[in-house]
Image 1 (cartoon, rainbow, N blue to C red):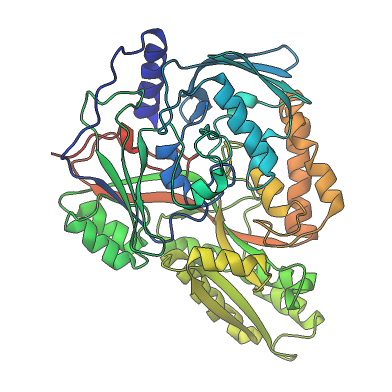
Image 2: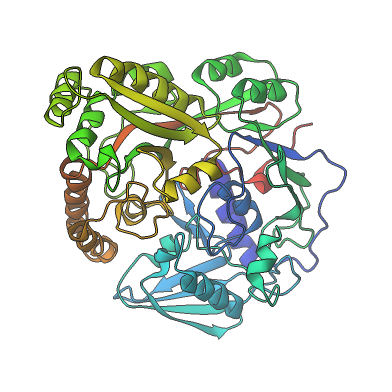
Length: 519
């Protein structure tokens, strides 16, 4: 988001100096911005627990203290206009934007910031771990909030997280959990929830919040709609007809068509989003590490990248390039002879027992379908059958929590622009499983990972060494996963829209308030 985020930072600083006396009313009578997704949008309404696809809506409904700027690779103002830390990095003070209100009408002040973050910390779920270093929060005055830490962490970066960093009105209802489950919000962002229809194609509608602190003087969209369309061909036809505004993912073939289609614009850039095959290390045949290593070696990494035609880049290690913890020189390669030998040692393969593996992936994702098809074809001569099952995300996730598959295919992206998320959530021991869907239980790895957040601040070279050691442990020693690619974002949207750009720290998010509607 080069131009847009730089401009946004400047506007935020200006707003901090001279807040508007009267906030203009939201626009009316204009066409909505319609976002097409291939998976269900909402999996969790509670902003303290949210940890999935709803980020694409929540980043338009809720706000965080800071926002990560991919140009400067630093935090920029959002609800906080400025901040400072003590010399030892264990005390952080944030100065809040004046005259901000929640959609409930109550003011967003230091007490509200303290209450929302403390409630998220107490939830102990989703990405709430990002606040683990916090020992106390003090509301110094209505516009100043101070955090005391048990150990140093870059709290300005933590406060920009895509999950668990939202500031919300904890006084919205006596039973806040019930309030959220009914499809209501308590945010401060430019849009508020107007309608939610679980399981429907037109799943979610947001409308402009007329008292938004940023104001509505220039052209904006008055509403945002999220439609679930698993069929990419149909999604593209809807875009061509102007019935939708934005399609977040197309097949390489459709994206190539979109690049030359009249009235359609495209966007392409590298991301922090990795494709992952998580192997069931706890139950079933994949409990045998030899089988996990065999599947790692069988994946046709180069063939997949070629077939994806620019929609993906090679993965090296677990963490993508551009973030702390990336390990260069670890791009995986296919080794069918090695796979066959490992299968034979485990009693399977062409001369052994047949092996059947259940693989689940997100319904409507053509890239996953390609992976499942290629892996099935590759493994057939090795006497291995892949039972590939496309599923709606919520159903796939619920099955995964019950350990109901051998290979769980999903994307992963960071909670904030840092590499710890891959290890702390996907490969750190946890029971019951949330996103640690390889079910890895490695106390030695856990102990190693627990040192990383503080080392990131106090000794970055040591933190990098810990990441490299953890990468070897997960991929080589435990063979808990295979990473076939890193996603290159390829979007298509209505040609008249201005102001759109991708921020890799917020995957698949369109900050609709920053857009200019087409004429």
